[in-house]
Length: 334
Image 1 (cartoon, rainbow, N blue to C red):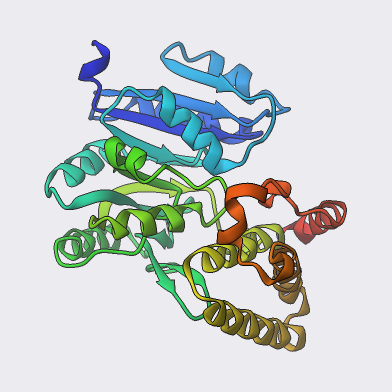
Image 2 (cartoon, one colour):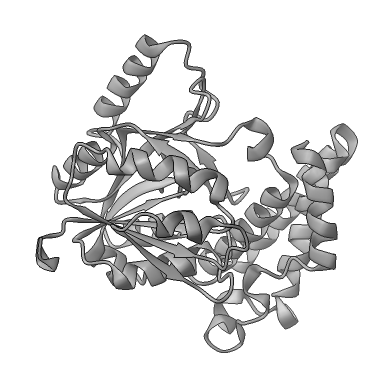
C-alpha cells in the first residue's frame, strides 16, 4: 500500500497508558475496515507504555520528551499522518469490529459533513457516555448528549443505535467528544487543528466550533466504542478543574466581555450551591475561576494576548503544589 492510498490515519495520545493500550490495539487490528495506519504519540510516559507499543510492528510511535498536553500531541501525530481522514481515539477504549467501517462510511455520505462522532458507552456497557456534544453559552459548559442513558440489554443498545442512525440525517451536534471521532484531514489542517491553548479537555469543543464556523456539519454515528469511564471518574476533581479552565478559556476567546462576566458570576453561584450541598465539588470551580482570572491581565481578554504572551503555563498551570497533589489523588475518585 503506497502512502497516497491510505484513507484513514488513527491517532492516539498516550500518557502512562500501560493498563489500557494493550486492550485497545487488538480491537483496532481486528477491524473489518482495513485501509488505515496507526500513529501513537506518547507524552513522555514513565511506565512501560512505550515497551508495549513497540511490540506492534505496524504501529508508528512518536515519543515526546515531555508532556505537551492532549491537543498539541494530536497535532504532532496529524503532521505525520498519510491518510485522507483522521480518527482520534483515547487509549482507554475498546472498539467493536465495525467501528472504523461505520465512521468512514458516515463521513463520506454527505459533502457537508466534516466530522463524525462515535457512540461512546461506559466500559461496563450499561450506560452511554456520549453521542456528541451540545454547548450551553450562558454557563460555558459542554454537555454530552445522552450521557448516563441506561442500556439494559443488547436489544436496547440496537434501538439506541437505530435512533442515532436516523438522528444524524436530520440534525448536527455542536462537537464530538474527544474519546473517538473522524475528521477530514484537509479540514483539520484548514482550521489549524487542535488549539494549543487547552492542555486537557475542551479542545474537542473548540475544534467542533471552528469546523462549524466554516460551514460543515458534525453528526453522531452508530460506530460503537467502550470507554473506561464511570460516573466517579467523569466527575474526578482534577478533571473537573481542567474542564473549568478549558471552558472558561473558550468563553474568553469566543465571547464578549459582558458574556464572560455573566458566566463567571453564574459559576460562582454554582460553586456557592455546591459549598452548601457537596463542598468538594466547589473546589475545582473556584480554583478554575482563580486560575482563569490570572490570564485576564489588566482586564485584557485572552484572545488579545494569545498572539504574544501566551506561554504562561499553557493551561498546565495547575500549580498550588499541583492542585494539592491532584487533590489527594482525587480523594480516590470520590
